[in-house]
Length: 132
Image 1 (cartoon, helix red, strand yellow):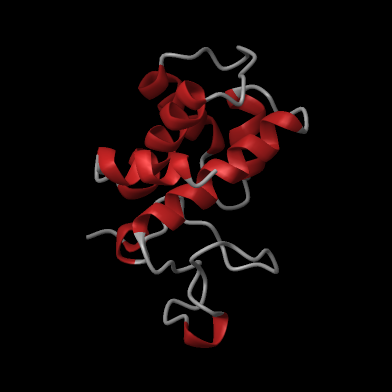
Image 2: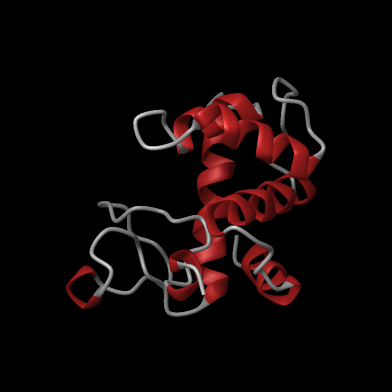
């Protein structure tokens, strides 16, 4: 399995000062770079919470979200934007709403790009959404 899936962190969220529901404590984290979660639903929830935060703070297009989420110093941001647009069907400058449909599509797209395939289970995504 890809690193993000092994860590139950399908968005490959980096370790930070943010405290996430269901995260493995930093002193028990065996990855050292990316957050690890006790269950997949918590890693998906963290990704969804980030997406909601970005959209509500004015990063309300795929271009704005991905430019912040996957900066060019670490990623091919343009390819990432195109991949998310292709996966979701949204246009790069289409204004996104932080609703269930949008957030789930974005989470699936980001996980697909980060992990190189469709690894998320519908049940885990539904469980994560109920935790929002």
